[in-house]
Structure formats: structure tokens, C-alpha cells
Image 1: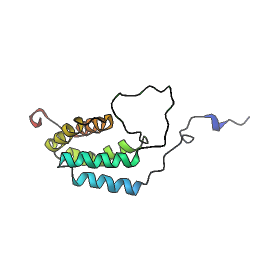
Image 2 (image 1 turned 180 degrees about the vertical axis):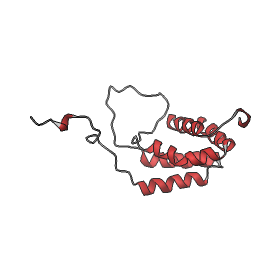
Image 3 (image 1 turned 90 degrees about the horizontal axis):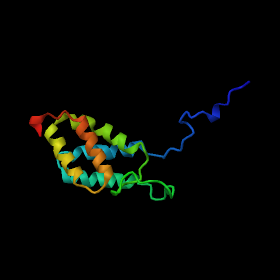
Length: 130
């Protein structure tokens, strides 16, 4: 008997968005350039997330929203890639990272709150840095 491998959930059968990784890396480099300017960083992050927002994607009509805050409908790979790309920068200067996190938390988009939380978690923030 031959096992039916097509019914196994290996992750290979899941739909995946086509993402130009070279462009995403350039956008992440642009975010790194303005990391010390929290307001400019926030604007560039918005621009990047708007670029990857899936405007034509329709969620199921019965889907419960994750949050009642505004959100971008992003492919699931985008935020982790941005967080990974910024992780070294976030670890270099805790005060700079806190300024960025504070700026992101003022935004009305839940995605920016998640990005801010990831940055704070990656930075080595001590009580005296707060």
C-alpha cells in the first residue's frame, strides 16, 4: 500500500504570497537609515506595510477580527522579516529603540504596536535606559 502524502499538512500546499525579497531588504535598509528619527521611521514603516497590504484579499465574512484597531492585511512573512532585519539595530542602542517603540505605540494600527513590541523584546533594555 502506498501512503497518501498529499493529504499530510506539510506546509507545502499552503498559498504563499509572491514577495520580492530584494525589494524588502532594501526597504528594511531604508528603515535602518531613519531608525534614530522615530517619526520618520514610523512613516517609512507605514509606507512599507502599505506596499505589502493585500488590497484584493477578502477575509471570510464570519471571521472574527483580531483587533478593532486598524490593521494591514499582510502576508504572514512580512512582519517577521522586518523584525529580523531590524533586530541588530534594536540591540545596539536601547534608548533609540525605546524612542522608536514609543512612537509606534502612538499609532492607530495594531501592526505597528506588534512591531514596537518585537523591537522592545529584541533590544536589551534595562531599567536605567527607560
